Image 1 (spheres, rainbow, N blue to C red):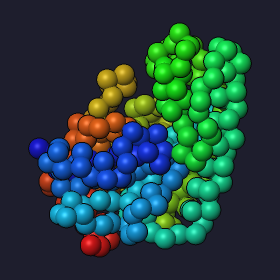
Image 2 (cartoon, rainbow, N blue to C red; image 1 turned 90 degrees about the vertical axis):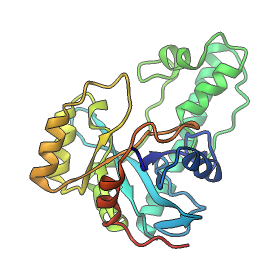
Image 3 (tube, rainbow, N blue to C red; image 1 turned 180 degrees about the vertical axis):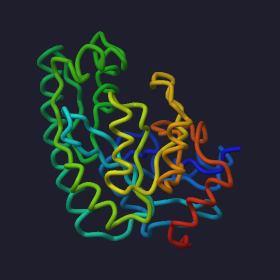
Image 4 (cartoon, rainbow, N blue to C red; image 1 turned 30 degrees about the vertical axis):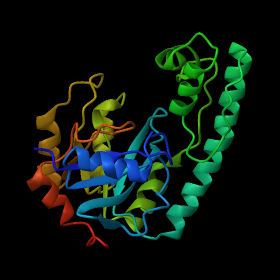
Amino acid sequence: MITADLHAHTTVSDGTLTLEGLVAAARRADLDAVAVTDHDRIHPDLDAPVVDRDGLTVVRGIELRVDTGSDGERVDLLGYGVGDDDALRAECDRLQQNRIDRGRRIIENVEAEVGVDLALEPREGLGRPHIARAIHESDADYDYQDAFDHLIGNDGPCYVRRDVTPVDRGVDLLHDACAVVGLAHPYRYDDPEAALSLCVEYDLDAVERFYPYADAITPDDERIESLAADHDLLLTGGTDAHGEQLGVDGLDADRWATVSDRLPEARS
């Protein structure tokens, strides 16, 4: 039984739920814990690394994309129990300004390409899912998936590559700020083996083992568990929720207890 979902997004990045909505969704899923892991942002309404919301443990986290410098491969790192760290916050501010600038350029590209007004203002936390939803809701003849497939996907005519943190810098920032640092969804990348090697190269604390993507490369579960055992890595997991459903994947009580032991005590 899943008791902890350690990968979820809110409206401060590209999720559809507010923090309170996410907490309510976690309760509906009968979870004991949820981690708020917005893209390149620390949720402003969480005032401690771990908080107790009427019996629900809410972990202040972050999902930080980093550039490995290897054939342009970019991977996501998950930080759990984020402390009040000025250097990480400054990097998040820099990344959010880039998101605003990049979002503006993508919106302009789409409007010129398709000839519609998306009625979408660039802002902090803006991601391509927001733009895809705006395209779907506009007069353009594209649904949400079409928007990615034909306009704003990595090979699309409206795509703009965003700035991300170099891996060395990102790992240092997260190690300094977070209680636990791990690699997110290793089998989503073009080269899973290279992604997994980062766990050892950068002395990460964890690797995400449980996640629900139907389109992912079939995970080599034995490979991940062997790597974790050999290098004392925690196994984490979560739904990577961007919508209202939590608890699709995550940790059972025993695995959550192992991760929880490495986190600061929850503050009420």
